[in-house]
Image 1 (cartoon, one colour):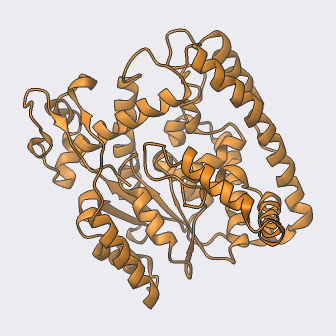
Image 2 (tube, one colour; image 1 turned 120 degrees about the horizontal axis):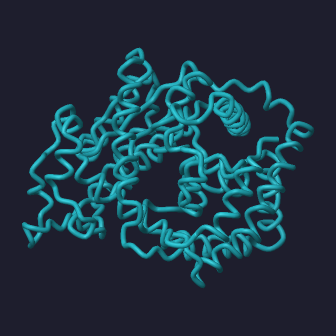
Length: 402
């Protein structure tokens, strides 16, 4: 069993006794968050660990499942990875991705079979009333999350499954204690090699279960946090293919800083509008430069580097090029799915608006800090396309990455 008990205790201590002047300071809202967190999460962690063990007894064949040439979509948050993954995951003949319920509710085979059996009983004996209630709860609770669309039945970031072990960069949101958390956001360089191997072996077991459960299809994941796991993933999956999405740093900084602020406010009440600004900027820079440096050293057949602008402006053409690079056939029915997604994306209009001035930044600041990224990808440097009514304090109006 892989569970970081030491980190669990250190973070719990910090949450209760070292939270002053952090985004997790102990306000009434934060105390409610901690109450529900410790009421539900440790119980689910324990249950899931027991179910992982049960898998070996009930479904031992999963241990022989090969995970062949998995596809990892990476890049900074808000760079279009969700759009690309969800479109590719609709190719059910060739690919499979983990849906949100498989990541957070039922990462084990035992849990998945339990919930599916419960669904069949509901359909037979209760006319699907429990399922309808679950759908309404899903729309009410997850549909209001301000990021990409979230649903139990949509593919999402499988980094979340590492919450079962307390070994994930995601925990910087509920527990923003950087002096306590290991630097999972710089995984290859800052996490000890022995711990890396344990984490990746656990992750392989998760993928084996999922691929076996879905009939041996090729696995596709999207995880911004994997930007700094490139070498660790290659050691565990030597035939892996990486797709890196690069977005204009002006867009990325504004969108990602706003996203981080929003997530920290879900878990607490930060005193600042944009907590840990310098940390966030450093993370963005590392998640550009480090993965690109590693991908540049890989064989061409293991890397695909795309511009967000090209993905959005020519989604159909970009996806067909990706299939050609991956050596995958496009089934006739999938052409229609691509065209349908292109049409819906064309009609998409974001309601998100971001202010660099409120973040204490200017377009010039971002251009200077990310000059090499602008040079490499030919991104627009002047920010004029994003300025609204206040040229001295540009208000960015950008399409949020789905």
